[in-house]
Image (spheres, rainbow, N blue to C red):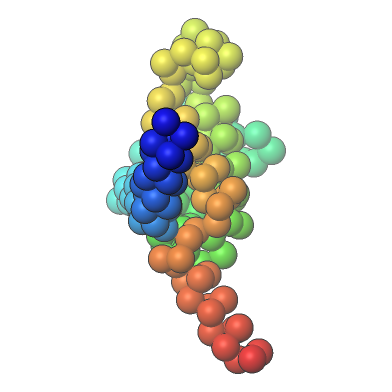
Length: 162
């Protein structure tokens, strides 16, 4: 029985090791999914500047910024940062930046949480934003992975130093 259990644990360890190889692909897919969501939002803002101005002046309540500055920054952040995220350049920093940006977006738009922020946070409010936050947290915690410019630049730097 002891050898049967050992064999079972060994098989499980081999299976887990094989699944670990999916990590870089999972991180790439997380980065791409979040990047696409933010980039699409930026394109909507870019293609309708008057609508964007209206939303930032009347619907979104971005703290500390005028509505014009918030609209300008929001548009360009959503058009530029996703590219950095998807290619994995400054991956952790870009993911952290977009995580905070996502949080500010949720806080600034109370229509996302009509029954209260905490109810929406635990309940089913602003689900897209929660999923994006979790994907970004994975990139913050583990980095953008081996399928990224960060990994490529790191390998080149190590080769040069050797």
